[in-house]
Image 1 (cartoon, one colour):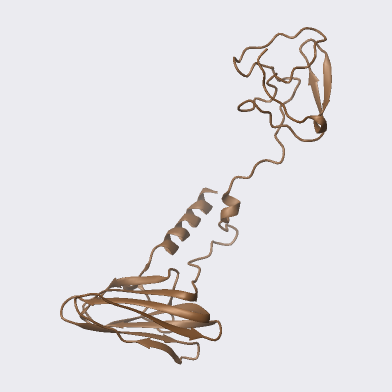
Image 2: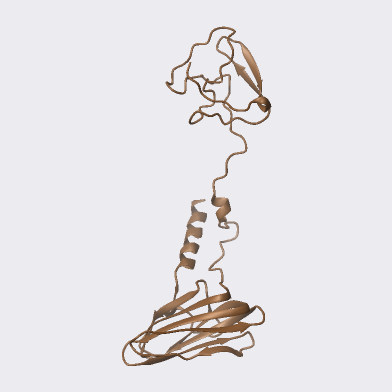
Length: 237
């Protein structure tokens, strides 16, 4: 369980942070999948290009581009290609040491896998590309077979369907408020105030059906039909 939770936490951390472009693919045939809607980084001081993949459409896709130069001016290529290699979108920003910000949009008629090419020159400084609209991000990684990370629903503690009942014959009834053992006269009525199940607080977690068989210290017994019990609580003598 601990191992599975560590895997789940690692996945969440990887999805929640932007992709650092300097560590991404430079191979057009093996692009880095978008696992976050934003890639960001800083120029390396030389010409470089990176490739990313994502699924989008049908509908409008928005691309937000931010770019600035380390010094002087810089320009970049932001191009998107479809599965056939045809250029679907392009934008060539120019920037100085002041941040250049632009939001561009294009529309797809159907869902498809796209490849984004980002080319930077030697003067590139900080940059980021953010996707929005009809975009589907990739899953970062799958858990090893037989050790699948549980979903959030599985992680939530579920209430037990039935509260375990200790052996009535060996249970020692006590007063919930004082912890003292109450005195019980022979033939007296069974008092639901007896703490038979060591439950927290003042309410018992009883099953909703079946017979509860009680054996008193004096040897008398009593059966209670649990389907007729509305509630049970600890009361002071």
